[in-house]
Amino acid sequence: MATTTAAVTESQTDSRRAEEPAPQRRRKVEGIYYAFLLPSLILFTLAITIPAVIGIFFSFTNSIGFGDWEFIGLVNYLAVFTDPAILQSYLFTFWFAFVTVIVVNVLAFLLAVGLVSRVRLKTGLRTIFVIPMVISGIIIAYVFNFLFSNSVPALGQAWGIGWMSESILANPDLAWVAIVIVTAWQAIPGTLLIYIAGLLAIPGDVYEAASIDGAGKLQQLWRITLPLVAGYVVINVIIGFKDFLNAYDIIVGLTNGGPGTATRSIAMTIFTGFSGGDYAYQMANATIFFLIAITLSLLQLRLTRGRNVF
Image (tube, rainbow, N blue to C red):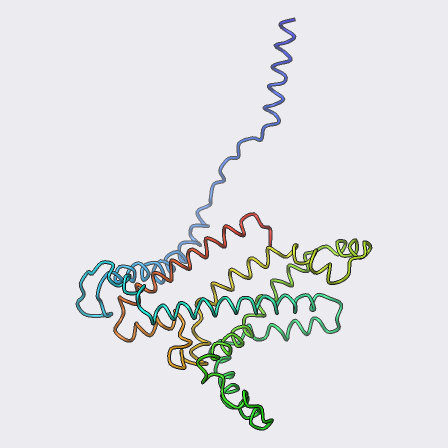
């Protein structure tokens, strides 16, 4: 009897061992992969990492970009948080990024829904809608600068419309609206492509079942489409917000930070300081901005972890 019990116990143990997954052996990485990685790593280090470390070091000094300098500790960082010009640039940049990311995602999502539906010439329309994505931002800015400064006021005067008769770029309260319009015009195509990929990944059977149950198009959009593309929405919002925080070329081409400093972004403030003798001071500003970007990147990784989006 004892022999039988021992045999059964041993058999159960062997069965459990058979069911347990075998420990995965660490795959050996071939040396050729390191050979391909090394040039990119060297270039990244020389072009990004080393300049960044040097810049962070000089943010603790009183350097003007050349000549002698002295170590002054956290003086630059403390001054940044009390500088009204820099605080204004942060306020403008975050407000601009917040509004633009909403405009871009709403319009891109609606366009994507239309372009995946059964409409004629949808392939051609998709091609047309992505054209702004391949045009340089500074070129787009100069074109729209001419339109806002000349064409639109001329039309306003011809039609007798008072608010159109003056350039919106000269109004310190409304110039940011023009920047949002132009930035959205260029950013919508990239966001649109991601939404189209998400919509095409939804099985058609889901909509057929919903139609059989009596769900209308609006209900399907709200209760099926939006929940199933939620991962794409999160990615588009976070990536778009980070990109809009770095706004520079379109603002330079449209307003150059004006009127006055009403539309000066963080990036413009930093670059202007580099050429104005505030190298160390603006490096402190750039370091703070870098930490904000890192925080947003970590937030993106946390929100998108485990989502099989692409």
